[in-house]
Amino acid sequence: MTDLSAFIAGLPKAELHVHHVGSASPRIVAELAARHPDSPVPTDPEALADYFAFRDFAHFIEVYLSVVDLIRDAEDVRLLTYEVARDMARQNIRYAELTVTPYSSTRRGIPDGAFVEAIEDARKAAEAELGVVLRWCFDIPGEAGLESAEETTRIALGLQPEGLVSFGLGGPEIGVPRPQFKPYFDRAVAAGLHSVPHAGETTGPQTIWDALTELRAERIGHGTSCVRDPELLAHLAEHRIPLEVCPTSNIATRAVASLEEHPIAEMVAAGVLVTVNSDDPPMFGTDLNSEYAVAARLLGLDAAGVAALARNAVEVSFLDAAGKAALIREIDTYTAAHAGG
Image: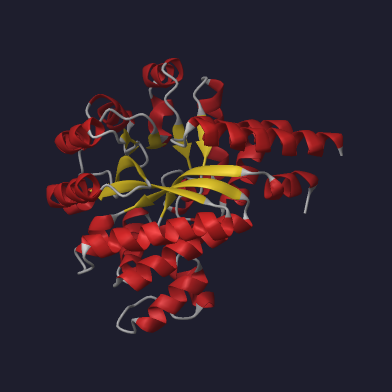
């Protein structure tokens, strides 16, 4: 392990763009697959590497939904959520905003109250036992249309789980225009939730503009195509609208051809505030520590630069002010000790 890799591994971190089901480790996916033998998902953790080799974004969605189908009762939900937090603790992730898609579970027969109770129980246990603070982004699966938007909004605003801080939109972007979801985002924002839709991952800059103007986005999930529009880049930089950048994910889903072509350096050069995230880490053979190492290489960062990226994520998170201050102090203390060592 290089010195920088060791620094990243020990660095206290926050993660803002990481999916609930997409964070299931091979061990947990295999365990769930064994419990549900009618699924096409392999029960051998070793075989999952081949299963998670994606031809394109559409194939990724197909595989992702097959894993979603393994979450069939509240016990599955609770197990998954707690184990995701355990994996985060191993990486020194202190705070994470986990993107959760309730509709995927409720339409498979899990009662909404039981679903929310399961994630909340896991959240409280993770904080008490693992030292990981979890918050939720309830996410509309765009491919499921307005029915899923209505259901997600109803659960978010009707049940209002304590850990819920934001409202999102995921799934395929092609053929799923952002503006149709405006009424649902308006309701969520009016209820005090933050708007954090995916946009510009597999589509052009107009999708990002739509997320900003129609969905009142405060942060943009991915935003990869923003570099194709100088006016948009300038707008993002001027208004300090952060991008949740997920480099390895973009390569795995073929949204970007190669890491060498990834636009993160262009984003930073334009003054855009970027955060680094893992998206669906086991599916993409990565984790947050690896994504920080990738970003450090692409941006030419030393330990101080990596620490600045970690502070970015904390500062633009939806953690309360006291929590932000405490985590930034922890990052600064760790960085100073590393520099002194």
